[in-house]
Structures are given as C-alpha cells and as structure tokens.
Image (cartoon, rainbow, N blue to C red; front, side, top):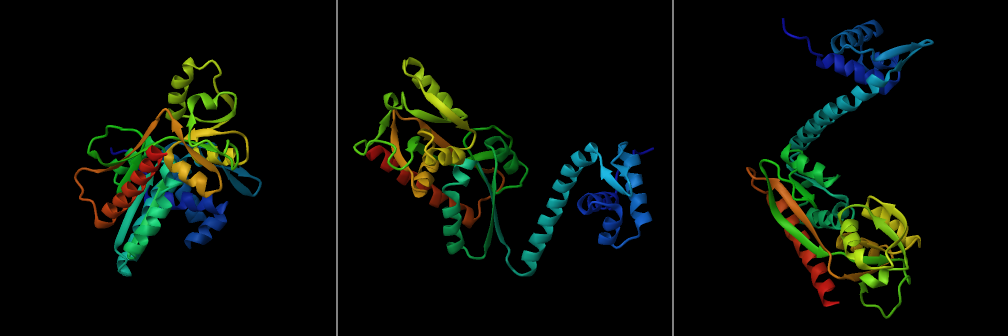
Length: 304
C-alpha cells in the first residue's frame, strides 16, 4: 500500500494557520469553515507523525516541529510565488529576467552599480539579486535558481562552469585621516602595532601566514565575517583592515580611506553558469561591465 503524502490543500491550511496565528483566522483567509481547516491539519499531523499545534487556552500554539516544518513550506511557496510573478511578466510582456546570486563582497559593492547599468541598457529586463555564501552560490546555479553566480571559491559541481573571472588585489582600508597622508600604500610591517579589524576567512588566513615571521603581529580588536561589516567597524574608528578590492571601492565611496596593500594578496571571483545553457545578452553585458570595472581596479592598484 503506498505511503500517504501530504496534499497541497493540507500544506496550504498549515501555512495559513502559521501565518494567521490561529485556526479561525486561517479558515477565514482561505474561505473555508473552521472544522474543515482543523480536519486538514489533523490529517497532516497523522501523515507526518508529528504534533504541530497544542492548545493554549482558547487558541493554539505551534510546536517546535511546526516552526521547523514552516521553513520548508515557505521555500516551496516562494517557488510558487516566483512562478506567479513570472506569469505576470509574461502577461504584461516583460519577459526578460536575469537572476544573479553573489557572494557579499561583490553583491554589496560593485553589483548594484552594474545592475543599474544593465537596466539602462536593457530596460525590459527584471534583475533579481541574491546575496549568499560562495558554497551556496554554486548550488543555486546548479539547481537553476540563478542564471549567474559569483563565488570566491572554485567549487567543482557537475554542469557548473566558470564563464569569467574577476581579479584584483586586496587593499588596506582605514577611517578618513586614519593613516599618514604621505603613504601611497600600506605594507605588511605597517600593520603591526595598529588596531586591526579582522575579516574572517581566506584573506585573514593569508595575512596570518604573511605575519608569521613578523614579531609584532596583528593587534586584533574586532572581527567580522562580512566585508561590509568590517568596513563599517573601520569607518567607526575601531582600526584598519585588509579586505577585497571590491569592498575597498565601497569603503572609499562611504568616506573611508583605501590604499593598495603590499605584498600583493590576490582576490579572485569566479562567474559561474550552467554549461548546458547559453548566456543571454543581458548576462553577457553584465559580465563585460563587471570585468571592465575589475580590470580598472587592478590597473589602479598596480600603478599606485
């Protein structure tokens, strides 16, 4: 006998109860009677083998299992909402769409300006931007949730290919006036003895290797996992830091100081796409714009 599975109507009833905060309000939102909705939820609880709600006075309260299940349900409904949005675009003839998933260093810095450029060049295209970790980026591309992905890690996933590479050199950031005016770059020895904000991850690991023979070491006063957070801490005067070149541009735009760092610490971002899919004209234009911007950053860093 086949194992019973939840129906869409059961899941819809459960989601309504979670979002509405009660059975009665959920039933009203779906246009059904309260007993009918209660029966759907009871059937769902029987199938999944979990108690999803407990009585609390005249109301019901979701269990921990219900809250966990709701995360999965929301993912499913977000996919359905995406289909509806796309259908609406087809109906209104706004058929162009480009979905981009990028690591925070690029997504918070150069991509907004690149998307602005793209919208001017292709006004009919709707651009969707998601910020995620490098590992998640590759998965989004493989699962066809993103047309383009930007990752700092070369993750080998079936069907996912590197279609471009954006290169640059890491930079030293400081608050305005936080470094001597005559400095044109910051070398490793100048980091010692100064309050330092650490960016957790590959950049900090490479700095630790470089600093291994430096008796002074780094005076770490704060650390963060996102480059944008590090920039904000530096702007508030907590110290200086070494970050990727894309965050360096944003830091300068926000009023901070950004100088080349020596010795060179390369930072590479790989543009990912599915190998069995041809890139659209908007995707190619976005890549070309980002490539030109990254090349300009590299040229400035080398010349300084």
